[in-house]
Image (cartoon, rainbow, N blue to C red; front, side, top):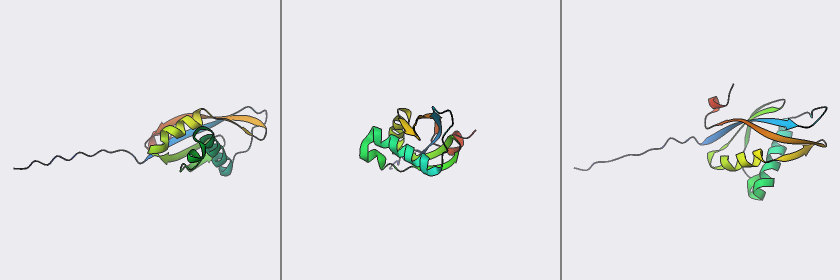
Length: 111
């Protein structure tokens, strides 16, 4: 008699992030999806170099200074470190990211 053992893991294919942009402006900058994409790519490039800038990121929703993004699970640690340590400039003022929430499930980062 042969016994078959099956082991499976349920790892989510993506990691979701709720980001907030911190800024040092008297008059805050206007943010559109292209600006969000540019800032995220700049953070990845600064921390991980050219390979980091190729990380696949989906911007799911952006409202004023909050954005909800998705990336592959294998790139989540690098994205977290890149965003957490980034200090950049937009329209002459300093900006940085605050990671409000992170979860392997979209419902984990909603309010």
